[in-house]
Length: 121
Image (cartoon, rainbow, N blue to C red; front, side, top):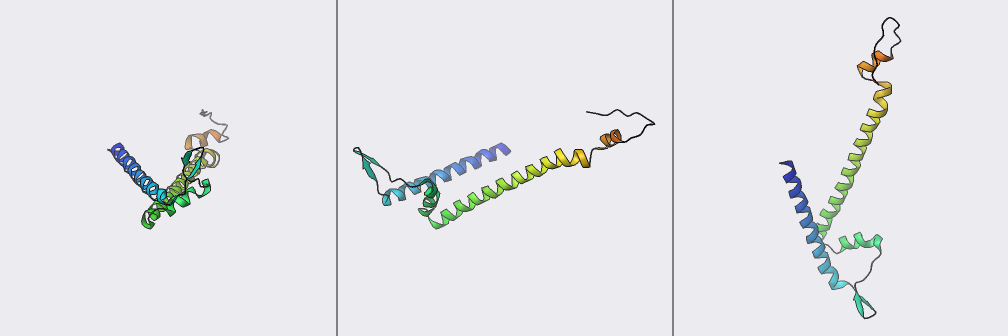
């Protein structure tokens, strides 16, 4: 059930991206100034840093807002996932072994000469 929702979401996102690209291509072909070289016509070239800004600039305001909100949401979701992963790794690898070991390891580290306890590696 979960995988079908994942596939459905990916297909829907793919269709939205295709619709946005086709809309942008239609609008950009009307205003772009093509150039010719060697008898061949090439589309106008823009700097790579301005590509996303011009892409959103050619879109309708509402569609551009939704696209920017989606990118911001993806960015914040990625940062949240990375932060959770880093915190989990730090807790499991550094804090628990040194400051809060499991009960079996605590008994192993006690200096009790009366009885010998096996310790796990």
